Length: 244
Image 1 (tube, rainbow, N blue to C red):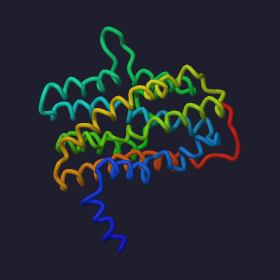
Image 2 (cartoon, one colour):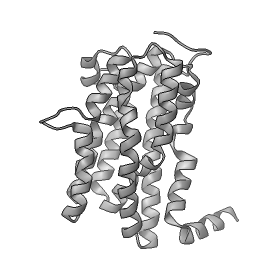
Image 3 (spheres, helix red, strand yellow):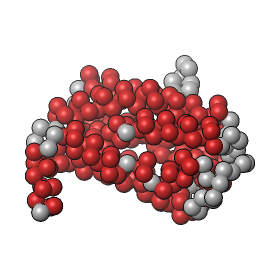
Image 4 (cartoon, rainbow, N blue to C red):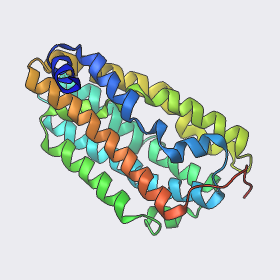
């Protein structure tokens, strides 16, 4: 019965409802590592391991977005999508960008920026998951690749929780290093709005709708797999708040 109900939902359910259901079930805000982070029980070493590994994801975001950009069929959409690359890479004139903000976070948690950029702390599973995501974005139909970015529908709530937890429960972290998360509170809803508009407009067949839902599931799996690897490598946390 459950299978038949799922099939009917797949055929008739509103695409937005289906995408939101993916986030409710599979977004990585529910991962044990994030739950421990928000509870304030991660050690400095565990937080540093997360920041160092997540850097590989951050630096790969504009590469992923450039791959999607190359597949977009018209300049109007390319003009919108290119903002994502500049948001993370910054510009020649003004520098900045999300990657630089993440390196500021690395410094704020006590990491050597050179170690982070040289990927000396990068776990093989993190590299494998992120590289798989970039390949997916490059090789899938553009609307399916765009759908994989719709974790941004769920990101603002997680960012808010993360900021509150890091400020309140990890006072040894320099708050100036949290600018990346504060900026994403503004940018993620903007990016999600345009991506969702395109997906709903161009995923017009049952097959494309299903592919878009699976793309978002895949992206959630990528994020979850990264945290699995970090949790395995750095342990499951402690029983109380930590200091550096």
